[in-house]
Image 1 (cartoon, protein in one colour):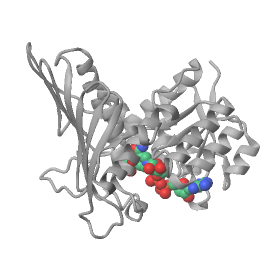
Image 2 (tube, protein in one colour; image 1 turned 60 degrees about the vertical axis):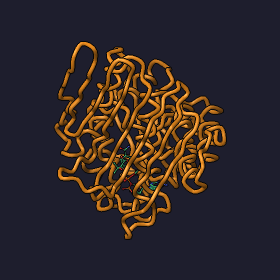
Image 3 (spheres, protein in one colour; image 1 turned 135 degrees about the vertical axis):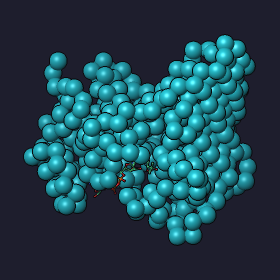
Image 4 (cartoon, protein in one colour; image 1 turned 90 degrees about the horizontal axis):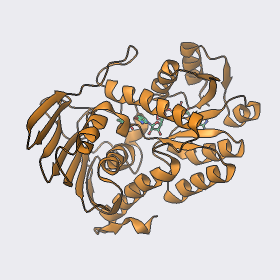
Length: 343
Ligand code: NAD
Ligand code: 89V
């Protein structure tokens, strides 16, 4: 098996998890890194022993020598960097959120298609092991035909200390966190056709909305509620757990706080502990997210080797991003927005 070589652009807060994930992956090596901030370049370069370091993506692509690029920068740079990768014929992973606008996202998919390169959005929440366990339970048929669901993320965790930019954008929780929950709703209940959303800002110190409630109509006739909040003070802080409620024709599924999965069916109620693994380099409470990084990276490697489209390919993730855009529009115009307005 030939070794796959990768390059990583953006050596900030979250990229450290991605570097650990690549270190754990079999048959892959990150051979070059890039960041326009010399301090970040040095920290990540020294921590992971990467000698090839670049302050500009243009210089990185000009030198080449890698099979794929992992873009871990913030959203403003996603389109130019993905287009640069496509122009260099390099397979590309890009962090969420996809892009600043739907027009940018569509252009990024088109650029990769034209260049014939694989393109995946790093949408890792559906790769969290508790979410996979819930999906497997639904697919087992134990609760029958699903007719209703809820994907919920409510917390008061201080995300701004690690990611200060989250406090400054006009858009906050739907674009940053709701995007994950909306993707989980698609993963569990199928594609959506319309969304009705309400938002508000509770924390006066930030620019964007920190509470959002979305109601989704799914193609399969399922109705789901996707709700998220960073203004919810609970007795035990659940960050960063996504909780689930799913009702089916024969029973119910609940993924509750502390990773407790309960499946109630005509055969009885089965309760299991679906704690994610605490990897040697991971730290609580982030271990759930950190484990999912390695899992989506493994999926990328398998897809690249087998020339398969990744589950969260750019093309697929347009559906998730359309839900983000439609949710903002719905909240702004106080109406139900069909996704056909964006797709
Ligand atoms: P960050 O600001 O800490 O890091 C971004 C880094 O990219 C910075 O070091 C910056 O200097 C560098 N950078 C930006 N533009 C560049 C360019 N054009 N060329 C070279 N370097 C450039 O941000 P972060 O918190 O690490 O977030 C990065 C991305 O990861 C965001 O899109 C964020 O939404 C996403 N994220 C995803 C998850 C997840 O679970 N999937 C979690 C946290 C953050
Ligand atoms: O997963 C994310 O995208 C992060 C966080 C969990 C803090 O919202 O930005």
